[in-house]
Length: 442
Picture 1: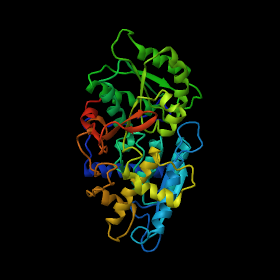
Picture 2: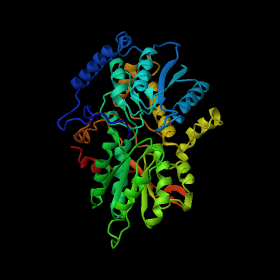
Picture 3: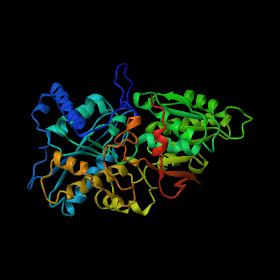
Picture 4: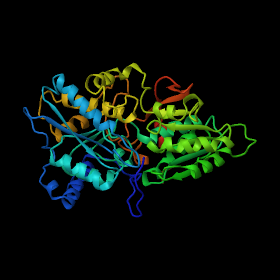
């Protein structure tokens, strides 16, 4: 979870007493509409729920992600969305209608993120699907003002788990870190967390600490790092010094990295500095590392060997990914931006699976932002072929107490690096709901 820290910004956590009711949701939509009108005249001309049209017109959606920036980039997400549209259209479309995917580069800044959302409104998108953006405060007001659902965001901001128009397919960084902390709590000595020095990065330590506490461990040392640095020697040294701790301790320390695309850069510095700190182990989360990063870091001889890695989905070699790989093979085999092991591409596939089932549930009826939201809000159960638990979106009290009323899937997978390969360390999913409930977010 990343995003530039600002000195005056409201908290993205909800009060503990907050509960989403029908009236509250209506208020949220009205407030969003006012915000959109105040900031963009064109937004006032869009009546919530009428985008998309019907008949033979294409069903319009948008997918956005950053590309070509100095921080995290996810070019595979919009690229896969376009491939998915080609594939779905070649196979009869959605209920006989063509799918039109608009793509947008949010450039990892608030101005571009808002511009992407305004374009979605202007071009009557019925949903934003399978996207990544750090800047929810910039794009959600425009989507809320037009009533456009945000389906399958990457889970990079807290607002994705609070907005009534958000339909997340995974538990975001909170679930990954809680699951990782719970595992490391029973095996590690001192733990250092290296994370972005940003607003969203500030939310990561409580989640890791909730897992460590569940494992009977002390809290991690919080090591902040710039998200766009070209080297991390200072941060690596500090993290290793803390993780070394008492040399007489029975358990070796662990360094946890959650720097997104900059994890590979950090590991370059870590590998050189680590020579003076033998035995220190590493742990991380998918999205910060994949098989490509592990290979680049030295595979079996690199710093990730033996590391625990938490993910939202099964390992990329799982047969459940075969339908996604078929789409890539048929429509984007030569597109090097699309990597089937990339968590962003995987999230986009699942998000479009959700959208497809929502449209199909309308039985040929009008496809609008309002009708898609209605299908999801009325208890639609979405199956993803074993890639996630059955998904259903409703406002629940279970995680609303820590500010995440829309976090409906708190299950993670536990993986490990063995002989340089990312493999399943445990069969099936681990539910970290109860661990998250105890997170100290005040």
